[in-house]
Image 1 (cartoon, helix red, strand yellow):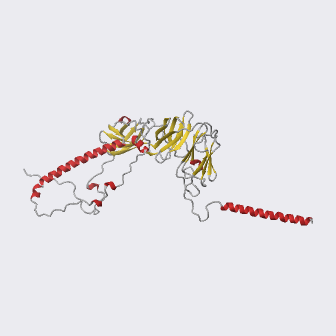
Image 2 (cartoon, one colour):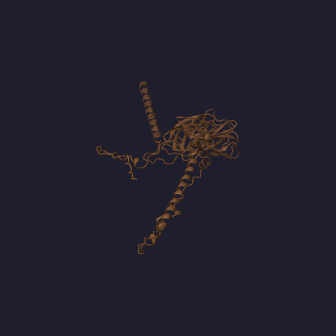
Image 3 (cartoon, helix red, strand yellow):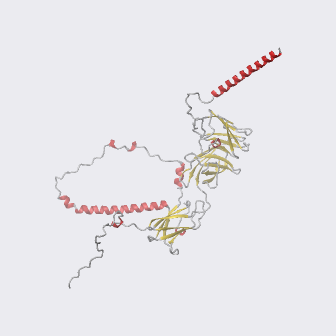
Length: 467
């Protein structure tokens, strides 16, 4: 009897295990079947959208949160469409008092700061339009969440434009750091494709604003990166323009010299020259390389723009003088040909008049598309302060001797940071003029028949007349 009871209990236990295994397999199957798009269904083409944030934008909290949570309407990818592939590059947290970490949780992310969010601060969390879903659909617009850990949320706005001054263009994607003084709390933003940025809901106060060309995309201002800075007193709103350039600690040194003609040479420096301090003849010394004590007299030193303008004026004057000479020549020829025209036969066939094309043959002026005028703030800023140049043009008082090698030395040239250069030197050679006429025709070949008698190049003596 005991053996029969033990066998029954064993069979019942095995039956329960079989039912448990079947149930677990069914649950696992249902879980796997619920992920992803249904087989054969069309993939989603709309970008992910931000549904909610915790805390909400505009919230005033009694105590700082542990982290900020952003919830999306679908599963997003763990990598983003930006130079920084991780999700940490998708958000800007201000003021950033420590490294920012972002954790992925399928359809939401959590954002935290090393050291935690602190009381009595106004925080800005900007979600950049670089988040993509599993089908690589990308967000279209940035979203900003502003919340407070104590004070009321302000309404001041700090806006502006960053330009790459030496490059002569808008600084696309430039890093903006607005340091609230005296605590130096950094509020961050990124410039758009035309160099504009805007920081809203900023605490009023004095700011030190940096515009940085963040070449390595590490969201920091590195020593060799171009930047500009301005101090701004923010009350309700402020607008600032930043001209980013590399802040060198040495002045421009001459790198090369290229002759333009016998009285002009173009010199190039190793870095841009300050447009506020002119390069004059006292900063440039030219002499023959064989005798450096013999100085060449200089007439002037011009910027490239001034030299091009003067060249255009000279070309226009020469063209006007040539046109006047041609007009006088035609008038004299017409006066000499008056009698010949009078004797011409009267029955000569007249030329048919030249008729203009019909109106429909050419597009009307008002039907042409109007030229688009760039009115961006970056364009206006560069028009007010054109990009600095690293070249100057030296004009001499008299033509230099062709084929002679000259030494040119520069010193005390001022760079963009106001630092003067030390002595720099290079050399150049004035080219010889190219021959003209039959002798310059390199396609002609000497006669191959060496047996033919050569022409006597010595002129024959003139005959002597008898007295």
